Image 1 (cartoon, rainbow, N blue to C red):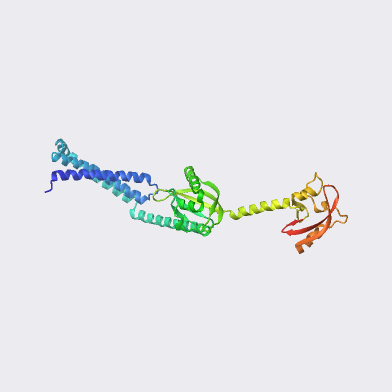
Image 2: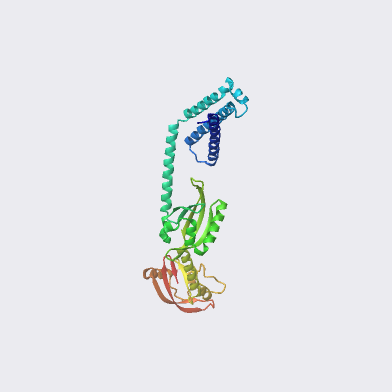
Amino acid sequence: MINYELVIPFIYWLLVLIWLYISLVYFLKTNRSKSTTKAIRILLLILAIDAFRTVLESVYFGTYFTSFYGLIDSSFYEFLSIPQILFLPKLLNLAAAILILSLLLKDSLPDLIKNDETQRNELIESERTLRAAIKYSPNPVFIHAEDGEMLFIADKVTEITGYEESEIKTLRDWTKRAHREKSGTMLDMIHHIYKLNQKKKIGELDIHTKDGRVLTWDFDLVPLGNTKDGRKTYLITAVDVTAKKENIKQLMFTEFSVNHVGLDIIWLDREGIVHSYNQHAEDTLLSKEASLGGVKYEEIQADNNKTSWSSIINQVEKKGTLSFVRNLKTKLESASLLKYQLHWLNQIICH
């Protein structure tokens, strides 16, 4: 048989605990969430009002019946039984109902829900656009969460490196494969940049592809917003500078070769003015005090019957290469009979 003398007070006090817990969760959630829509905020406010009303009402009647059944002093029951006091919970119910009704009349809830659906659809479309922009980016792009989970990976990453998305599900997976023995250093660098919370250039790093190639990518890291579950997200962009670095190395090698080859090499423009020259030519031609820069072709010829530059350039443009013998001035201020070639290099003549 049910002991109502205990059950009825127990139910009221249990309601107090449950609604206090609901209120606590409500306040914690609303304080953390900054992206809640207006319709949701109104619904949560209605919940808060109802929770407040229910807690006060449950405290009132919990005290009333606890005292009525003799579990606490009977003076509480006598006081709460006064009609003017007994009227207060009903007045509280009426006030809560009017407040909730005013909230619903002020902002039509169906319209708010419809607007929320429109906003949600726009967000879904924006996310779809973002995914497509990243997926088909011409450069390697990653978006990852602060715990390392890869959220988006551009097709360019898998296309260049050969790694499948299933092989690089986390930042740690990526660094182990792409940076190998420097994986730990790369992770430490990224975690340090996290603390700065601003765009930061990581710089040029070697990348190991699945087929064994070593490429050079120039990395940048940019902090983004938070995921729905509150995790911070970061964008990593990269530019493949492997070819650029190889070109620089080739140019450096070419410059070294040109300066150390035992030939006089001079670059002249269409007007016959010296554009550049190698070290050997500088050591050989003109006086010790003079510079070849800006000198005209005619000034380094020693022939009495100087060939005009216009006639030379016409022949070079037609043939691409022209070989002949000319006397050129040297630093010893004497004339040396030299055999030389002219090569057409776009707007520059290589002498």
